[in-house]
Length: 355
Image 1 (cartoon, one colour):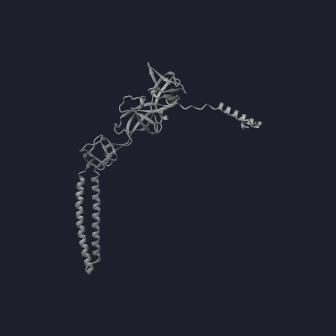
Image 2 (cartoon, rainbow, N blue to C red):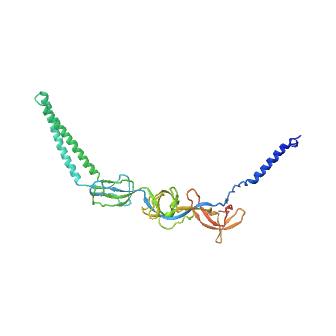
Image 3 (cartoon, rainbow, N blue to C red):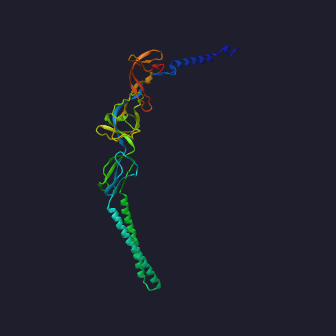
């Protein structure tokens, strides 16, 4: 007899009925499984987007330094002008002091005289040693000759050291660039008389940043690492709603200064490609000053007929919508077209054919 036709015991029948009841109850309580979106469809869900504020930023160098003279004298050679690029240690000017060559010549003459005295002391020492060896000379004369030779040698060493100091001063007439960058200002002309420590040129280092000044109310939204959008050169307005943001470059906030000035918070943004900008040039920058929820769809999913925008739902119907501006891509959040009204969360839209 088949096992399905065998009589069941009351206990097994009760267990089977309990299992069936539990399965039915579990199926009632659990939500239906989410269906995977078909290719070419999109389920409408609000997502956070950044509110962008347009501000003007100034192109500045991270560090500015001065090339100074180390000796006083007259500027004989000036090899740079405003806008020139310089390397570390490059000679940008030469200061000459006419007294230094005269001092070198005087020291050379004194060194020659001392060397003559040294030669004479060496001869005296040789004779004193011969006399002392033969017994006709005294030990005092030998000691005096040795002391005279030692004094002559010490005087020569001191004079050569003094000559080295003057020669180093002459070499320090070369004004060197303390850092690589661009020359912003040249403060002297050829033939000018300068004093030690006087600035010759102002140099901006190669690292350029955008310095932002934001109102105090936006300080709490700004932090290091936040993305910024940078417009092209010039003060013509460039909207972040430009499709695809092709005219906008990306940057990152690298530092937020802890001190406010004039009710504004100051921050620096790092952006590539600022080397060709003028230092002090103003650029339009968009920064995020908060987030809000919005419905964003790809721009090519919108239908426009007779001046009205439509979106096609998955059931084939078309609903009119009010389109807003284009949301640019900020950080890891993709951009798109904001829909102000006409769609609600959970709507499934499809991409129009041919788009």
